[in-house]
Length: 330
Image (cartoon, rainbow, N blue to C red; front, side):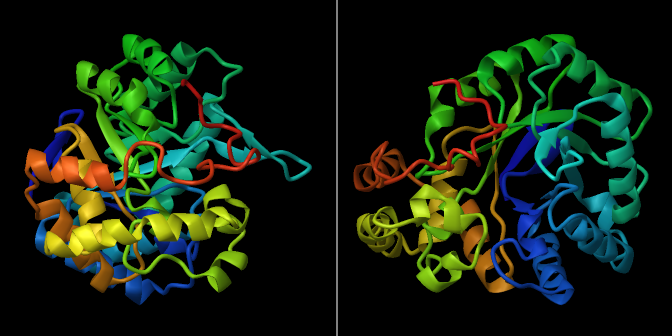
């Protein structure tokens, strides 16, 4: 499998997004998560990317249980987690990038994971009231203490990345990036390449839209996130499914599933891009691995973008409430 650099660490170009280990997109079990992780290890996938809030710690607990049950696994994988999203006394979602909060949350993550450090620790949402240089200094303290090997940010603007990187080396920026979400091409993809920062692309299969079996209407209605997401609300959802028929046909022509082709496209957008799809099944993960291992020609890349040109997707990627936190920059 092709590799990428995250800071000083060489990792597989395909990683695992740990949100799916927490029932976010549907019910799962620890056994299902172990099956995905076992398969990933067997095919050379080395990056595991999770967060303290995925299932309120459940994702980290499952990964930690797998590490404990799998001799040699810890030395073979690159583990990333995130913190910075919390709630106030009234239960409202807020962001806290203070040293006290970030260190306490990282300590809890390390306990759940059963390890003494993570390889990458992200600020899950940047707290804009604090200068990013100060937040970066907080993260650097955690590196100095040996609790993480490198630092990253999630959903920040290119200008914010430049300021942070000037304070301390930023190893990775995590951002939604896929054929249905092209905003990173408006500066973030380029800035990451210039600064030798990995762009860790989450939701590379469009939260199931870019697959052969998009999440059906009845499951969307029961999902707190998707049920409020513009791309999965009518009439946008039906319009998107219609537009995706050509993409699924093209994937079959290329001897890949739609999910595999979506992952392949993202990985081919830069040798600093790491794709972290999430899945609840080993069967689906095999499709994603096939995409990561595929070689696409310039002509094939052009055909993909003819079928799904920039701006094809109906609906914003987030609702107004979901947009609180990520930085807009274009």
